[in-house]
Image 1 (cartoon, rainbow, N blue to C red):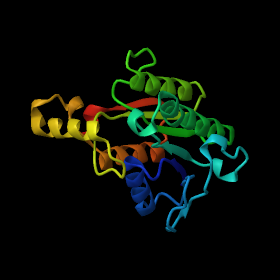
Image 2: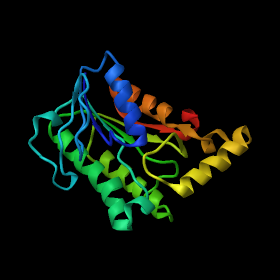
Image 3: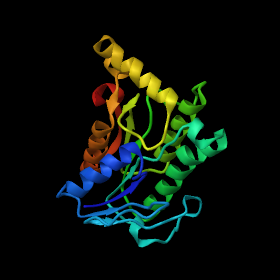
Image 4: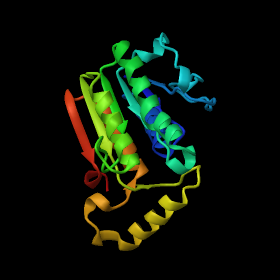
Length: 209
């Protein structure tokens, strides 16, 4: 099975990369990246500009796309930059992949995603879900984690503080509000990509604890 992974250098993406390389069901893993990745078996990592993705690249034709692209307003620096990473890039990837005949898309979104949300972050997440669904993939899985547990390369103080509080409360919280380990999210995404079940599916935060 040939998979495309975007967001391979992020917290969830790194775990997907590791699991996909180790999975015998995956014969080829295409990871478009901004900066070169170390060589690994089965890995093809073309260096691309996400603002000008190559439409005719042969590697767009695959069995499934896994999208783990994402940032925060603080890291992005502005609403416009945040929307570009969390909406425009995932949609552009989806458009190129479906045009090449790739039937399956798996998106890492967020708990509370809704195009009508009063919160900008959740509204953008809802809009990207809506816009990718409108493209008509044979199989679309949307994973909606809450707080993601794991070690990031970037410093996110507000998120880290939230993780600390949630860990302290532990099992007093409903399952959907508990920490979702990045490795569990990666596992759910990879399983969905390989299964390619027809239709639209949502993996909620409660099932990712």
